[in-house]
Amino acid sequence: MLPQKKYYRQRAHTNPIADHSITYPRSPAVMDWGSLFPNYFPTNGNSGIEKQVEFLDVGCGYGGLLVKLATMFPDSLAIGMEIRIKVCDYVKDRIEALRIQHPGKYQNIACIRTNAMKYMPNYFCKGQLKKMFFLYPDPHFKKSKHKWRIISPTLLAEYAYLLSVGAVVYTVTDVEDLHQWIVKHLSEHPLFVRLTDSELEGDPVIDILLDSSEEGQKVARNNGPKFMAIFKRVED
Image 1: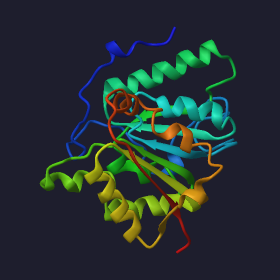
Image 2 (image 1 turned 90 degrees about the horizontal axis):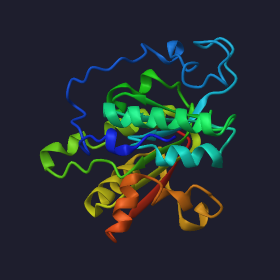
Image 3 (image 1 turned 120 degrees about the horizontal axis):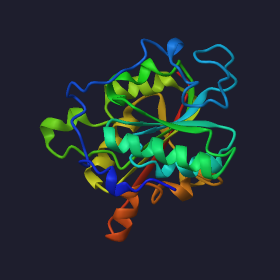
Image 4 (image 1 turned 90 degrees about the vertical axis):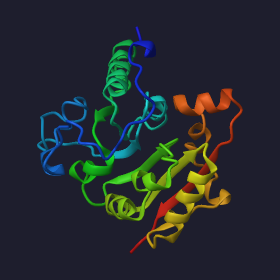
């Protein structure tokens, strides 16, 4: 039986600058992926690794996108990062329940509680990631809090380091001001180029981006706007 969200409710957003009590690896070399993906990592640590995590959903919420990615890309490992404790617990329990209900499936997705703004480089090596998702991130409306936004010049430098050449960054928001902010900063960065509609043809992810998350479904119910911008990591 799948867990019920009503038992895992938490505030929609949290302060990413606050001093949260989070355990994180000193470096990617000591990250224990085996506890998250036991079918792909025969032993803990790096010994015996068969695959690397290649997809990252930043602020994965209740895991809607992760669950869809699991079946859409059964040969790729996807991880969700979520800073809210109860929400992360829900995603973990949801994945565990799905694995029990569907033996052999959903082994390629997992969720960790962490602060992506602070600790992302502790988890991934240079050029490791092939897809990154930022779906309906906190807009931080006040100008004084714009520095908390998940897309910024400083953070884009980190993302560019972790993404392989040709990797894709997917962004969706229902806030036009935030959309313009995202497009501006990604367009101004020399290592990212926005993809055109013709270049996105054939990408199966496009069809699930807008409504896969709980936030996206809520926006749809309210007939709210949705703004999407997708960028590619290019060579130095």
